[in-house]
Length: 90
Image (cartoon, rainbow, N blue to C red):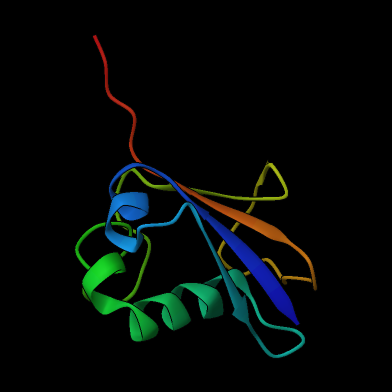
């Protein structure tokens, strides 16, 4: 199945693109996608959206089709996954 990942801020700059499409096995979970991203593009994702273990970094939010889901959420063909960086302000 194919899943599209939408990137913002620092991730978008490092990839030189706001989107990346990846292929996963049917039944893959969000955690599987994060591991794939960390393995395929470690220089982009590790130390930013993902910690060195390939887990979601503190402050980052992941949405699937504009809904907040857990890391065990099963992805489906055509899903849009957004990796949102921490938001600060004051």
